[in-house]
Image (cartoon, rainbow, N blue to C red; front, side, top):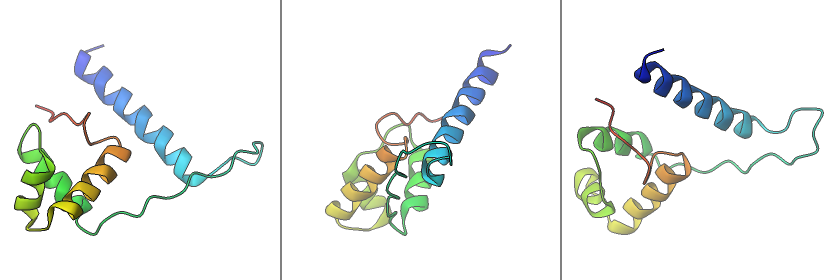
Length: 92
């Protein structure tokens, strides 16, 4: 199997795992559902900006989205919680 296919399958497994956590516990478990994270309305715009360059800082994000640094930092926290922040890599 090609390495790129393995990477895609791994990412799909990670996404599936996160979706299951968002959906809450299955009927056979007593685990409480994870608290849903409130996302900033500019969350998806931030992902678009991250896709333009390999790495992005909160300062670069604030300049790109024309928002204050505190809001950019909060969005960066949301991106990291979604698995896209510090471990985000631009795919070739």
